[in-house]
Image (cartoon, rainbow, N blue to C red; front, side, top):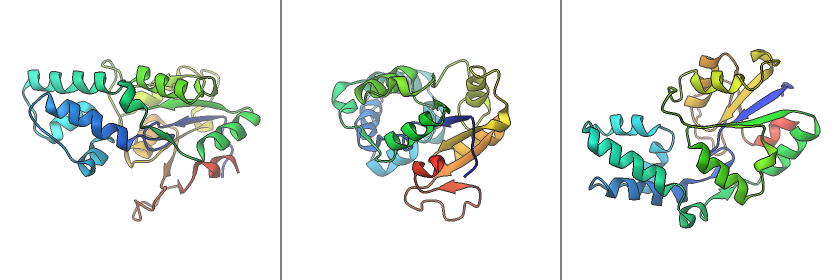
Length: 208
């Protein structure tokens, strides 16, 4: 595994198993517009921005889109849903090993910065990350270059070639490429057999 100076890590599905939590969150959002969803559907929606989900489901009415989005963003931080979030076993050992080697580590995600911060606080990991880049109405969402380019502003002395972005969905390496940094796909359960780019089965491979 190549040795990088900075590691940008996705949040949902990469650092934390949030699927069970997001089922309740998305059901709350869909109920606000008279719809429902299954766990299998949420597993797809969680890798999209809320705007992309609305487009995917052909929700064109602006008032419905707004109600759906606002309810999702509110429900994300409900204590009962945050309590369902689980941390993957490889996260803390990987963070400790990277920190011991003096690496910079950040979260770059399509989730909200407030929600990410609350979850990191719950697991006492707030101080393990240099910063958080979350969703923003002023930036395009993944797989555009914007999340990476915004994150790089925090590291003006680090070259793009010394940064890697790691995430668990195909849009994550696409985002990395768009932003001019290396991308690694985290494939915990052999979900992407046809992907031929660089991928790992556990975050521990980053610290070998």
